[in-house]
Each structure stands twice: as C-alpha cells, then as structure tokens.
Length: 187
Image (cartoon, rainbow, N blue to C red):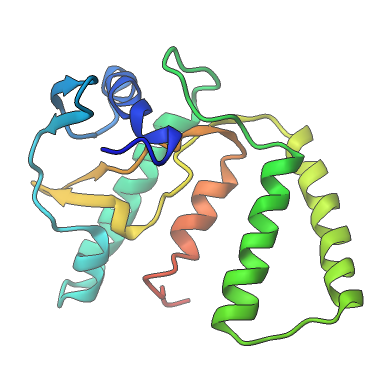
C-alpha cells in the first residue's frame, strides 16, 4: 500500500478489530509496516456485483444482500473502536461529500450546470440535513459499503476496503448499498 491516503495504513488494525467482533473480513497473514506490505487471506475476486451481474437467481441475490446487511449491522452495534480510524462525520466532511456529489455526478456525469442560486439552495438544504445527522447517534460505518466491496466466498459475504471506517450515521452504509453506483436494484 502507499502513503498516498492516510487510511491505507489503518487497514491492519481495523481488520483485527473487525475479526474480533465476528465480521467476515479477510484474515491478516502478515503486515510489514516499514515496507507497507500486507498479506491477506485470498477470498477470490467474486464480488456481490459479479453475482448480481451473472445469471444468479433472485433468491440467491436476496440472500446475499441480507447477509451483507447482517454483517454491517454487527458493525453498527459499535460506537467505539480500539484501532485508529478516520475522523468521523462532521460539518466539514458532509460539505466535502455534497461538493463531490455536485462536481462529479451532477456536473461531470449528468452534465447539469446549476445556477449560483440553485447551488445555494442545495447547500442550505445540505447544511440542514448534515446538522440533523450530526445530532443523531453515531456508530461505526464502513463508508464504502457497495457491491464491489463485498466479496462472496463459500456462500458468505465478506467486507473489504473498510480502511475508511469512521463514526457516522448507519443510514450512510444502507444508502451506499441500496443506491449502489454499480448495481441498479429493481424496485
């Protein structure tokens, strides 16, 4: 791993914590911090995304989604972690999330150019929502809980890419899975 992102170095300790609370994550085989090397249990490369895209039946897909939710619910039962995690959600991070959404989805992907007045309305609404979320009870969240970060191995769901874990609102993970950028779930 590189030092490009602070969260990369957090992976080993967070993995140990998650294993300790019985969340399915790859076992850490070794960690050489000096050389920034991590060896992990090989769970293959079949993600929930791949299962949904394949000819899998609805019953199997639904079962795997339920298993994924069971796993993240275990995480959401905790509001502390002995391992160092990224800073929790606050006004600054919610603002960054809104701007990222507006720049990358609205402007770049959808090609929608909002007026300054429209941007101000969105920012005002976003500030109000952020204030409500900050007042709500916080728990540990995965932060990138979507189909490509959920491996399927031996008919179980395994969480990966969790080094960005932090305190936040549990609905963040649920929304990430249900409004997955890679999978369109039928209503």
